[in-house]
Amino acid sequence: MGELKVYNSYSREKEVFSPITPGHAGMYVCGPTVSGESHLGHARPYITFDVIYRYLMQLGYKVRYVRNITDAGHFEEEGREAEDKISKKAILEKIEPMELVQKYTNLFHWAMAQFNTLPPTIEPTATGHIVEQIGMIEAIIKAGYGYTVNGSVYFDVKKYAASHDYGKLSGRVLDDLLTAGSRGETTRELEGQEEKRDRADFALWKKAAPEHIMRWKSPWGAGYPGWHIECSAMATKYLGARFDIHGGGMDLLFPHHESEIAQSTICNHIAPVRYWIHNNMITIDGRKMGKSYNNVIKLTELFSGDHPLLAKAYHPMTIRFFILQTHYRSTLDFSNEALQGSEKGLKRLWEGYENLQQLAMGNGQWASDGELDSKVLKLLSEFDEFMNDDFNTAKVLANMFELVPVINSMKDKTIPVSALSKQTFELLQSKFKTYLEDIFALKSVSETDNAKLRGVMQLLIDIRKEAKNKKDFVTSDKIRNQLQQLGILLKDEKDGGISWSVE
RNA sequence: GGUCCUUUGGCCGAGUGGCUAGGCUCAGCUCUGCAAAAGCUGCUACAGCGGUUCGAAUCCGCUAGGGACCUCCA
Image 1 (cartoon, chains in turn cyan, yellow):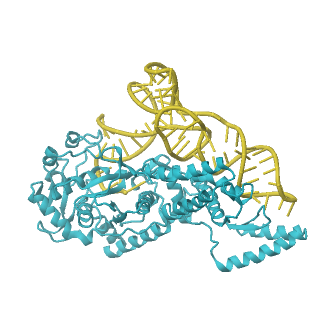
Image 2 (cartoon, protein in one colour):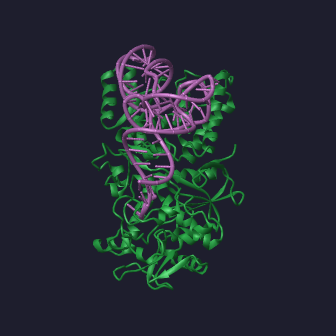
Image 3 (cartoon, chains in turn cyan, red):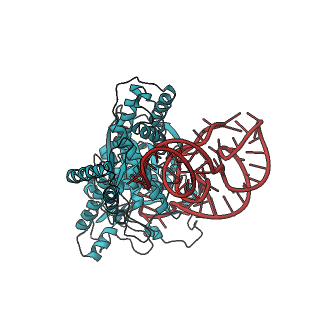
C-alpha cells in the first residue's frame, strides 16, 4: 500500500510516518474552547483530523485520538483585565459556568455529529485535570524553568532557549520576541507583564483576581492554569511523554504549540511530538474567520441559512465535502458560489456512487476493454497514493470524478460492466465504498431512506409509468411537475425505469 | 516594524520542471413524448518583469497585490 508521508510543521518537510509503538498511533488535537458556539472555521480541523484518524485506522493502526475540551477558558490578556472568559460570560447570562460549558459542549458534539465525525477515543476536560497541570508546573519549577511571582508562575523562556530551540516550530527568533514594541503600533501592556522576567515568558499558573469564579487551590494560592499547560498535561497523561501526532489549526503554532513543546520538554526530558500537523484557515473574502474580524458564521447558522452572508442553508455534508475538496494545508475561501458548487458536485458524486453499488456484475465475458480497465485500475490505485502523500483528499476526489462518467455509462449501458475485468469492477466498488463512507465519511444528503416515503414514491412512479405507456402525458407530466414543486425530482432512466431524488 | 506564506481559466480549487487535474458555471451536440439526469465536445489559465534551463505555473531575483502569526483564536 506504500508508505504514508505526512508534512511535519516542525521540520517543514514531508516525512515518512513511522509510529513510536508499532501498530499504534497516538494523536492529540487541540479541541474547542466551549465558551461559545463553534463556527465554520472550527469545522476544518475537526473534519481534517477526523479523516486522518479514519485513514490511520484504515491503514490498520490502533489509534488513540485525544481531543480536549477547554472548559476552564483561556484568560484574556488584553491589557485591560485578565478575566476568565467563561466566568465573565456566565455572570452576564446569569447561569453557572458549568451550565454554560455544558451547553456549548453539547452544541459542539451535536455539530460534530452532523459532520459525521467520529468522537475521539478520549475527550478530556481542562477542569478535570487541574491536579495533573499543577503537578506538571511543580516539576517545571523544580527543574528550574519556572518562577513564582505574586501567586503566579511563569516559564523562563530565555533560560529554556539557552539549551533548546525555542521558536523552531513557529519560525520565530527569540531576540524578536524579547524586544518590546516590535509591532510598530502601540506597545500593549500585557497583563502581568511587569511580573515577568522577560517579555517572551508565558504563564503556567495565574493568580485569580477576586472576581474570578473559576479558581483552584494550588501551592501558589488560588488561581487557574495558564493557557498552554492543559494540553501538555493531558497529552502526557494519555499519550505519554512522546507521542506521534499533534494537530491543530495553524494559528495555534505560536505561542500555544511552541510553549507546549517547551513545557513538556522540560517536564518529561524529551520533545513531546513526533509529527506536528497543522491545518490552514478558512477565509471569508480572503480574511480569516474570527471574532476579531466580525465575519463569523456559526455552524447553526450555516445549517439553517440564517445569516446575512448566506444565500441559503447548507447541509453539513456539503461543508464536509467542501473542506475535503481542498488540501488541508491550503487556505479555503468561503463563498456561496463555491459552496453551491460543492453541493452539486457532491450530489453528482454520490449519485454515481449509488449507481455503482447497484450495478450487477452480469455473467458475460470480462475485460473486453483492456484500455479502459487499466485506466480505471490506475485511477483507483492512485487513491492510496494520494492519501499517502500527506492526505491529499482533493486529488482522490478528482480521480473519483473521473470515474463517475465511467460508472454512469455502465449504468446507462453505454459501456457494459464487463468492459472491466471482474477484479477491477469489484475493486471499483470496494474502493469507492471504503473511501467515501469509511475514510471521507460522506453521507447521502437526501432523505430517501424513509420507508413510507419510498412506498408513496413507488406508487406515483407506477401510475406515471402506466400513464406514459398510454401516452397520457398530461397525467405523467402532472405527477412529475407537482413532485418537482415539492422538491422531488423524477428522472426517466434509459432502461425505462424511473428514479427519484429529494432536492 | 519583524517572521512566514500566498497570487492558477467566469467562480472554487489540484499541481511533480516536459504529459488534459478535478468540481461548479457557460455554450453546443446525443439520448428523450417533453423535461431533468446522464454521456460527448468546447471554453486551455497559471500576477508582472527579468533570469537559470533544451524546456518552468512549477527553480532564482525584483516589482505589485493578498493573507497569517507576532494578542484570545481552528
